[in-house]
Amino acid sequence: MSALPFDGPTTDEISDHPPLPLAVEFLRETLEHVGTDLSVPTPCHGWDLRMLLAHLDESIATLREGLTTGRIGPPPTRPRPNCAGTEPIRLRAEGLLADWTRLRPHPVTIGDLPIPTTVLGAAAALELTAHAWDLGQSTGQPTLIPDGLAHELLPVAHQLVPIIGRSPLFAPPLRSSAATAGDRLLSHLGRTPRPDTA
Image 1: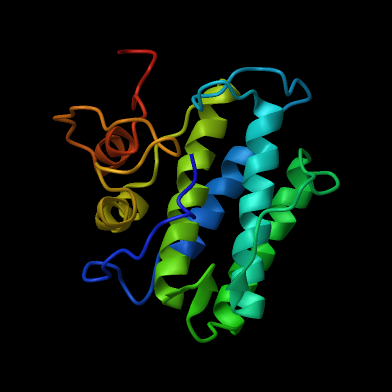
Image 2: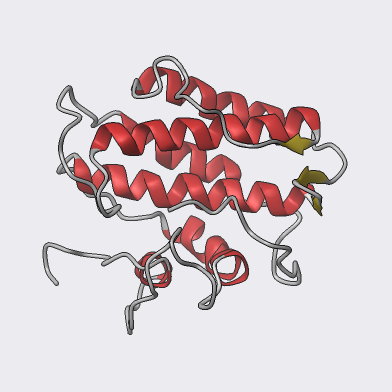
């Protein structure tokens, strides 16, 4: 469910300019459709909308921690305040983008592993995009991942979410002959691209 805890991927196909601005914009658009009922199920197995929003909020906070301090520590023992509110998440996502644009520090350390900042930015874009799509499915306002964003994230997904060792963070990849980059991206992440027509 998260692209954050990876173990030293190769970076051959990860751009020096991850599509984080596009991912933040996609997330902002899907957050607009979140209503007051946070008990609805999501594509993330066993999670309702409240849990997904809390996870997304914590992921953004973790990414910002890495960019601003150069280190990502262990996860907190309790959720952040207002973690299921769409407005705080939108503001934190915009803050993440501002951090990325302004800071771009030296490699970020996760545990004892140094990670290039470009890899962290790519992981952030993938995380936000995947969960923005999840939100769209949950709210009954399914949104296609923008083609340009999906094209840029496909090689990122193959680098950061390999076939082996992805469980329990991601479901197994699905076979796909889909023509769109967005559908191929979702299939690789173990999501059914168009559940209503599957």
